[in-house]
Length: 186
Image 1: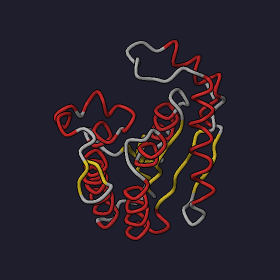
Image 2: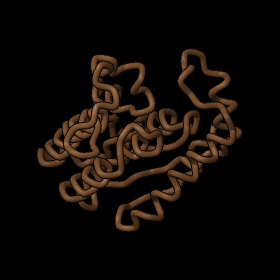
Image 3: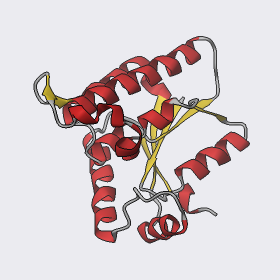
Image 4: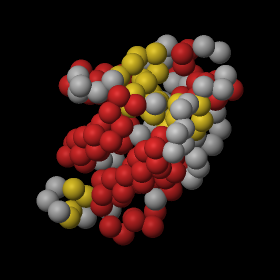
């Protein structure tokens, strides 16, 4: 099973994944893949593509969306190969192309392609887990964390992003989405 853990900044994604790993349930998709796939940090880590920012190619797909497609295709091949070779535990990914859609770093067309691609290859071995952590708790955690200046602390924006995640879950009924409060555990 590939569990893609999603949630707002400060929801506890990394902490929950670490807890699952410590229990021996699975492992994190290896670094550097998640670093380059973290859409929230696009402005920090993907500056080699800066000169192409907002350049339109192939219809309405911009280069950021195409870059994300390639990154998540690579991750999918890694995961599929691992399962084909007999790996039987869970694999975890901290954020994905779903965050890319919510935070506007990929477009809906690319998101749809990736959902179809992942579901087509992984089938029932794909699950999105949304950490439905209290928004005020997320904001407070972000305030306490140094070096995370990219995090959005505006409560109205956090509520908007939360609704965008949840509306996406409603729209894509054929994909396994789980809401979890595990991020609120200390």
